Image (tube, rainbow, N blue to C red; front, side):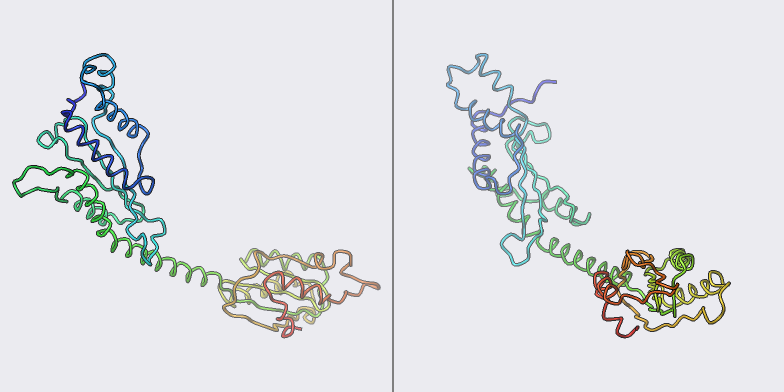
Length: 332
């Protein structure tokens, strides 16, 4: 299919003026000019500079035929630029086409630029629809006064539209910022709440048997609890529950009735020394830290006696885990 007819030379000169004015004002600041559009502007300038004697020769015809239907570019507008309310990268993109050839849909007004607004990620669908309607109905300079189109009307239209579009977008952008802030605050509050646990500290008179320590860990993991086990005299078990004390109580019932079913009642004594409600969870899982704190010292010392808890090593470990060393003053 043949290209639409090229505009008259005087109209092409007007279009080049429009492009040069708009591009000079925006430059690299918010201008998105595709490579093919930049090449089209260069070709247009060269075509209009050809001497009359060369028109019709092979070179001028090839240059003429290269000219596109329109030169397209984008203006990326920052409605809040320079204001106290930073836009956080939220912008409005105005897509513009400056025609170089006659198009069927604009045959009566062949030189008028056309514009549209793209939907940005921060825009609600209705906000975009409102801006689309605003651009569609934006008045062209001189419309309705019955006079001939004034010189510079094309560039005036684009620049005025960009300016007024920014003003139109300001309340929409501020509302989007406010909504996002509220959503972040709600999400943060929810995350803070979801990270809260009940932390319970328990002392055992003595804890050494590996199988019993392993049960303390595996039962806690199965119950969705976090914390740690430390063998020694006394033994220490710290349990965190995201669902409150009921899960911790159920955990100890399981331990006593299943893992400790072979132990005498006196050996099943567990003393709860401290309960922290609404505490931020500090442990990612549940594990036995006995060998980690004293890797070179056996749990059972000389004569089969359970070793004493190394409080210095425990304090350092608790501080690293979440600044919990001071809890030992209330626990031990």
